[in-house]
Each structure stands twice: as structure tokens, then as C-alpha cells.
Length: 213
Length: 425
Image (cartoon, rainbow over all chains, first blue to last red):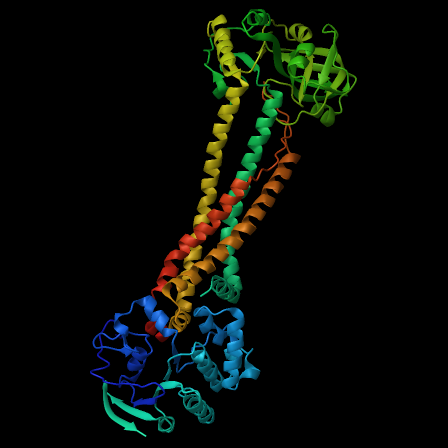
């Protein structure tokens, strides 16, 4: 739904993602990839069809159950979506605070995660004091905080320069290969897509091509 | 999310907009301060008046007067039955009739006239009261007491006893002329009574109904009779053997019957009852007015919360995307408002209390001497009274109003759809 006019963004998609997968979704603007990603990230509900996560149909869940589910999905946004008044560490801690972790536990884990994404030195800086790439790394650390089943990334390199984008790609790849994090990613970036194990091409709400490397 | 995390999240959001939060808090502060100040002043005033009435107007006394009660004001409300003004005269020797009534211990007559004293060539308008010094001192044993000098025992002497305020303000001592204008002769003539000030009363403070006051000038009743040229008195103070309601009622009835319903009888208990109900109404009224300002503050809170909600739509989207439940979003917003309400209420109670004390100090400096017939207001001492009940209610009220007005914005925040909230610019 966009405004009051119903738009059919997806028109019959059949997609299965296995644990440990690294899937890229490619497509032009308006091809429906963001809508698909919002469904996968449990931010939206499908009007028709089924969206199963570990066998549970998301469209049957109520608001509370959806919130619980979101805690186990790591979402990385194109525009980072960090809370501006919080430092990098506090932003990472926030998702754990929402999950109900104790202060000491989440502080320890936030520091570990920021170390993983290479931001240990910058963890007491606020988003405005960080570069785009650094902000995106904070967002990735935040997404990983609650040990998610999978990471959902919406154009993770869409708003950063190409040099930083390479670092982010490396980081994502490392997470998938070394830590066995399942990744589902929407991108325009051919280079980034080529790093993934599977590429799905979308057009007009349909999957038009699938490449398995 | 843990309660302490919700609280610290809300605090963070408040700190981010200090000026806005400060102004919102100020609204609550003004509302609560107004309520607390008004209530503590009126409660203090009530306590002061009640206390002074109880000392200056013993519970076992009745005041008998002609016609429409005594001293105007609340006296006319408090009388038990009213007598028509039909030229009836209450004479000094009526005390003999009253003394014969069962349960009456004693009674004494009082003659009062507006007049002035002349000292060192200066005139000061005052109330001149003729009383039997011995009887007066016996009925008002705690307040008709000399601070300096001696209250004269021989009623035939030309003596004067003055209130503390008369002494303090006009520095009166030695031989003094007391005057009043006799309008029964043509042309009206100023009558003069010359006497020695033999005693200054100790300070009584504030109100006195029937009893002695700080601004009174007292002369022996026998002297007053010839000075004022009358056998008529203004009031008769009756002391009963006890202060049972039954005794008060039966004696009041008996006195009225004895004078064919031409007199009115006032009891201290009745005055106190009326007084406390009048004060309840005043308090309710003032608190109601103050509550309106709190209502305005509440609307201010709602307004600010809605603006804040719009500004933070994206933030709410993020929180929901991270798995925050609707209920927690609601609590985060409510908590912000409750914190504002709580801080506002605490500051409001403190500043209301301070305001009440400032008003009390300003009041204390003032005060006037009135040439009134019976009720005399001296420098009224109000001690503001803040009961724990009022403080607690003010706190609950402040926090409650903040929470209620934040409920709608918080509910709207909690119902936002994450996808739409994240799309919001």
C-alpha cells in the first residue's frame, strides 16, 4: 500500500532461502525488491500468499508476535537508521535492551560486535561524528546483536563511497563465511551481488532470473 | 524491555529538548503551585481563625445581642434564630434575668461605641468598650490579661485599659481623653471621658468576636453608662456551666423566650461550624480555578507530545523494526510525560509553598484598626498550612494530568506501522 491507492508490488514470488545462504536480490527501482525485503524482515504483512520463517506463517502473527520475531531478524537499512542521540555503542545496545538483556551483558556484547566490524576505537562517537561507512558498520553490528537467524540488508552500500563499500562487502562476506550468518540482501551493485552465493533478478514484482554461483 | 531502560530512554529524549521540556514542565509547575499556594493559605487562614475564635470566644459562652446579630459578617449567619428590629432595647440589667436561667454560670453586659482617643493633641479613631473588668477577665481569663500595669479592680475609678496594638501604634500612656459624638442631642455634642491608662493587654492577635481585641479601649461599665448616657448594652456575654450541645441549645432557647424572641443568641460552636463550611466552599472554589490552569498545562503536554510524535515517527519505526512491542512504545511516551509531570509537580509543590509563605509575610505587615462595632481585625497572622494530604493529592494530580493527556499521543505512537514510520521524512 502506498498512500490510499493499493499497489500490487509483488505478483507471485516463490523463493526459498536456506540457513547459511548468501542471497542477493537485484532489480530496477519499482521492481518490488524492497517490498519483498520488508516481508522477509517481518516489517510488513503480505496481503496474499504465505511467508514462512522456520515454518511459521508471518501473516498469521499478531503485533506482539511480530515484534518478538523481529528481534531475531537483523535488519540493515539503506539510510542506516541509527538513533542520532545515541553513541555507536548505545545504538548497538538498544536492540539488546529491547530484547531485555541486562546492562552489563549488552555492554560487553556491544563492544565485541563493534570490534568485529572494526569500530572499537569509535564506539563512543555519535552517528553525526561517523562517516557513512562507519555508520553502516554500526548498523550491521546492531543487526547482529541479538544473534539473528538471518540478516536482511536493504542496499547496504547504497549511500557510501565505493572504497568504503568494498570494506562493507568484505565484512558481509566474512560474516557469511566465517560466522555462518545467513544474508538476504537487496542491491543495485553488480559487484556486491557477484560476491554472493545466489543472485535473484526481479522485475515488475516477479523473479525473472536466478543465478547460483 | 526493562523498566529502568524505558525510563532512561525517556529521560534521554527529554534531555534532548531541554527548553521544550522545561516550558512544558513550567505549565505543570504553575498549575500545581497555584493549587498548593491557594490551599495552604486558606487552610492556614482557617486554622488561624479557628484557633483565635477558640481562645477569644470560649466554647462555653453565648453572645446575646439585639436584632440582626452582632458585628455583621459571619455573625449574622451564625445566630440561632434572628430577632426582628422592633425598637427592642437590651438593657444592662438583663443580665439578672439571664443569670436565673438553668445552666447559666454568669453573664455580663458590654457597651460599645465608635469613638476616638485624644493623646498629645492627636486623635485616633477606635472602639470604646465598657465592660466589668472582673467579669471580663474571668470569662476571657487567657486573653484579658495585662502585659504591663494592672487591670483596675475598683469599677468606680476613672481608668482605661488598652489593647496591645493601641499601645504600640499610638504610644498611649498616662492620662488620656476618650471621646465620642453624642448625636442624640441637638446639636451633636462630643462627650469626653478622662482617665488613666492603668494596663496594656498582652498581645491577642487577629480576630476577636465579642472578646477583647488588640485594638480595643476598655473602660469600666459603670463609667461607660454615664459616659454614653445609656442603660442599654450592645451585647451580653453568657458563660454556661458546660459546652454540651444540649446545654447550648436549651439556654439559647430559654434566653430568646425570656426576651420574647427580640434577641439573637450566637454560640461559638455554631460560628465554628458555619466557618468551616464556608472555608470548604472557598477552598473548593479556589482549587477549581487553579485546576483550570493545570488543565491548560495538560493540553500543552498533549500538544507537545503530538509534535514530538511526528518528529520522531522515524525513530518509532526504528524501535519497532528492532522488535519493540506496541505496549513498550506506549510506555516510553507515557513515561516521558509522567517524568515531566512528576518534576513539575515537585517543583510546583515547593514553589506553591514558598508563594504561600511570601503572601503570609506580606499579610503580616498589613492589618488595620477598624472602628467596627464588635468584630475587629488586627494584624492577622496567617501561617500557611500544607497538609500531607494536599501535597500528595497535588503530586497525584500533576502526574495524573500529564499521563492522561499523553495517553492519546502515546497510543498513536504505539499503533504506527513500522514500514510506514520508516518511510516518514
